[in-house]
Image (cartoon, rainbow, N blue to C red; front, side, top):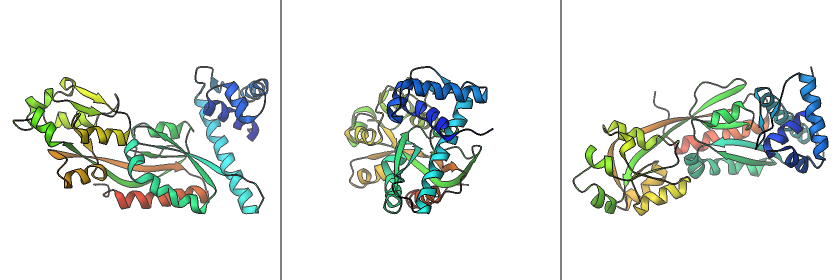
Length: 297
């Protein structure tokens, strides 16, 4: 059974825009036409594709259609380029990435691709433990993820390990840890979490024999702002070397001690014979491996 590209693109637009009305505006058709296309494809496939929530969400079957729509669009764009047709526009490539990679090495890695290919990137920031879900749902074409096992229909390339050190300012140590970095002191010393799903600081506390639920904490949900909050002394936090090294060398930050935490990262992308996806993967892998130590076996 064939899925018409126009109908698949309509489902993808509903998911991307969050509602049928917003999809209609993006596709420059009426909301009634969007609804008719959706009903036609659901009738053809015999499955519900969209959950009418706010925002609208794809069902498991809908995610397959969304992924197909994005593949249609990418292959159509590359065919137009290969045929020398005028006005193919710029390909849009959505990528899921964790905040620390986005704030450090990913953007310099993507920049060379924009000089050689007609492409725009939609970067979706998500925790590295959850980026794979966006790839599996068809929301993105590629992801920086901590998931080593390939998602169905995807290829995997190791990028390296993100290393995190527990650091704080000298002033913070004077106020909160004057007698040293002891479990008793850490239990009452403020730390900084990225968000409520961030477990990096809690993992380090557990390694110190501290119940992480006892420690007071700030929440700063942006990587650059998170590093700034640590440098300002609001709390201690785990920073990668690319963010902590300048402060450590200048004496503005101090390491609290071992262990260093290592999070292996992988690049997963759709398994398509696409020159654009290949170029993106090669550029990302080059940038990551220049910035990150290799994965520890």
